[in-house]
Length: 178
Picture 1 (cartoon, rainbow, N blue to C red):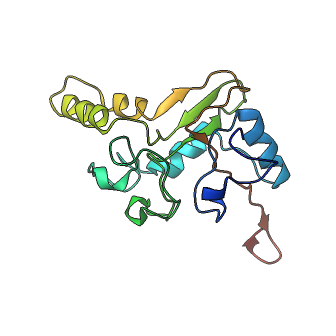
Picture 2: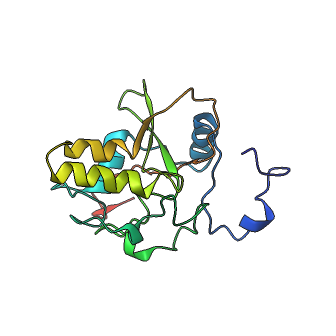
């Protein structure tokens, strides 16, 4: 990433608690391959964020601005564990706010940045929530605030980071995932 010096975290991020930001899709993909993981597909990310049956927000049905690092509350990303109340039922933290996360479509033909970032306005979110309640907006519009059809894969985005996934296989012998 652009803000790193000689391949190292900036001094204010050296403890590893802050998400890496300012990465292009290509950089995120290279890191995923290096770590033997991959960038999630859009459908996988949405399933992790909103669950099945579908929740309105990662944490449940009700908006709570204290559960997401969105503009106005912070001018930069927070440490990954800073908002434990942002967890979904599976324990995944900060799926809304903090940093946008790179995802692909199933066939890899399109890129997305999901989840919104610390730069997304809380007022925008609350405005869409109000319009949804009054019937002037569809619920999908709310998630549209948290989803960006990504620009070119080589572009670095200040608010873009990556959350990686690992494919699991079922071992019939041990009856465990590996």
